[in-house]
Length: 144
Image (tube, rainbow, N blue to C red):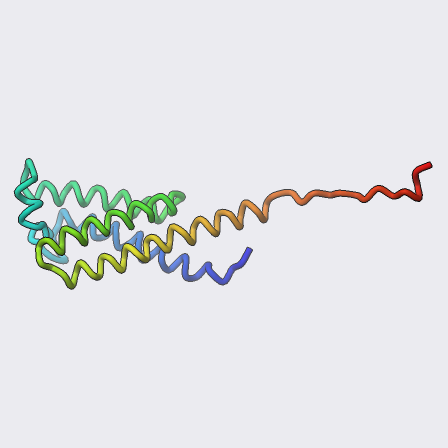
């Protein structure tokens, strides 16, 4: 198994997993920012409840995604994070926060990269554990 990708994989896993988890937790405390302010007016009009309630739901999703990335479900969590971050970026662009939207697109690319790296690592692990065939050539000299 090629170990050169271990450090980049771990860096992406920790970065994406911890960021999602901590951002999700902060949706309940608003220590980093007032998250409700980032909901686009269009999305806010479509919600059947307050933006604060919506941010609570978003927080739960982000915590779940972060935990998935940090545990045995890294690949699935990273794919979900990638799609989720694109949706967040669209919302941010609709709200006029283009600078933050661009950062979320870059994070989505990082999450997608983590998912693909995880696939490669899993395939390499399976291939390295597969039994190698032990074929013995038939010797014509010994057969009579």
